Image (cartoon, rainbow, N blue to C red; front, side, top):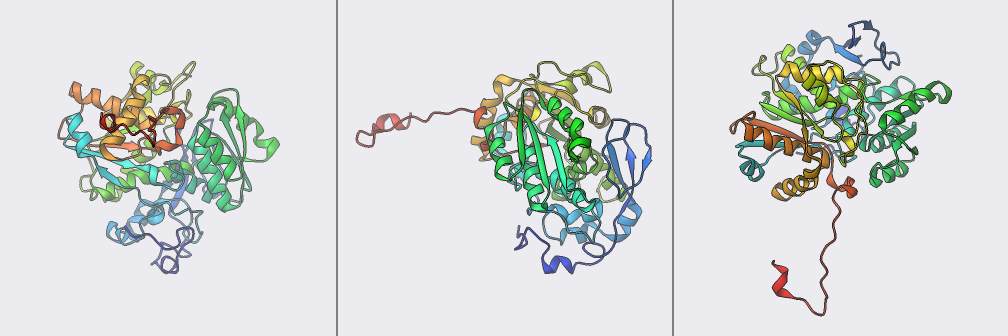
Length: 431
């Protein structure tokens, strides 16, 4: 795909796009809505949560249907902002962007053959600007924060969100504070420092970091960018679902395997699918994929709640997993995740901690895709579900690769064998 020459700003051609893509047309948001009780809230003001729970962005879908068609969207530059009518930033406001393009949906015939699947695809989010799917949420959240007058943001992170927030805050000229567990992967330490954020290691888990952010909001004057504690990261992540639909010619896969920490992407995709159905853009507006929420056995609060038939998840004690993005012992959007899983006919399942490194190697070497630890968990679960018959051999299966493997140096230690330049033993090289 050809990308705009300048991915950091709108090009002149983009600025001349027809109404309402990049003109003074305001926006298509109708209101905000409390997820826990449906309370209607006004759009255009800073918002975090309502009654301690997340907030939805709602759109005037009739106006969107009149304003744009899938055919028109297909003619736009292949980036996140091609879906401008279904995103909350007013159309006359320039987004904060690092050129976040559509990520490829890659057929995986060799790995699929090993697993007994004829239609295995990987949605490779590692190709986004900050090396993970967190670019999507932060592009939207920071764009809205800047538009609404925020000067300072803060968030807890288990890894990739901190780097993405720091990068987009730097792009926007905002001050950024990041708090991370002290055993967060070293690459994430490097990222937040590189982008100029004020970053701190904390002797606790991500929820402990989150408490620092919450407690400091008034004293420090920062806006809380935590997962699902503001409405707009969800909208950025939603574009994963919009892209899948467009890339599959406005159809949806049978099953989606999604590594779930805070769950923003899973919730966002489910929201996207229903918005597309109401717009009438899907070829079958009644058929949705089964969502498989994948967690590591060392931190699986959503799985426990799902198995118990509960809508809210309890804090997972002593959370520990090398898949750092899944080390979220409590999620503020737990009920939204569980509602989506159950409505889809899917399930929540755990992958084996001991198999993470093996699946990173196996999947990456089979297809040349940089598979992260969180996605390795998905493949472990997928293999078991194929073996049990829960996933059929001819179903279209999409697995999300949410980040690039090199961001997790600690997850897969390696020491290469040594070759003496003066005494090469050719006999052993091919063993």
